[in-house]
Image (cartoon, rainbow, N blue to C red; front, side, top):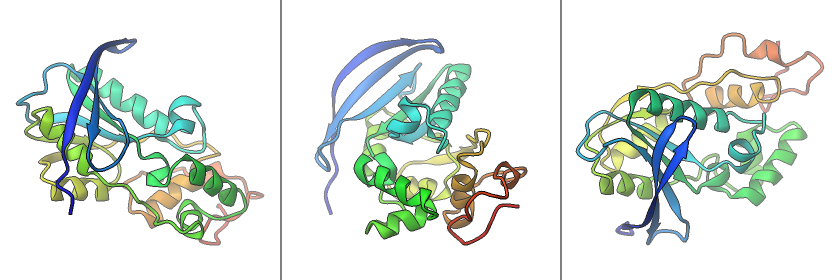
Length: 220
């Protein structure tokens, strides 16, 4: 077991349309990735700090891909932080739930052939979710946060962070509207990965002629 350590290497002011943030870049002894903390306001010593632990998604965050809800979750989280005047987005370089961009694109191709996100990962020799939150926990410790309100729909993320010593006092939902391209993806998140999503009105977004989901079911 690695004793995970993080080092804050640089910080810079980042003015945005939502207000001014500070961006901290961290290095660590667990992987060779540069993870980031986007911080607004005073968080050191804070309790119930709004926190989003966001896994990098090039296609959703940068290209605004409609295949997932990642970009919308990032934007919603930043808006919630701006409204509160303080909070943190940890931007973790764990593309594709930890499998990397190359295999994420390969998984997309398999999904277009009818597999869901879970089965596509398994077909490529991966676990459904290979993310590790050890570095994220150490980053929150370095930022001096005492407890957090975690912006997530994923209960496994809450339990993982709690196991690493993060005091999660509340979950804040961050659900974006579904669209025809991500409806099956969101359904898989809810039905196979236990994500806490309101699925009302989700299935009708898929037309009857669309391929079945990964469980062999055609949309209603």
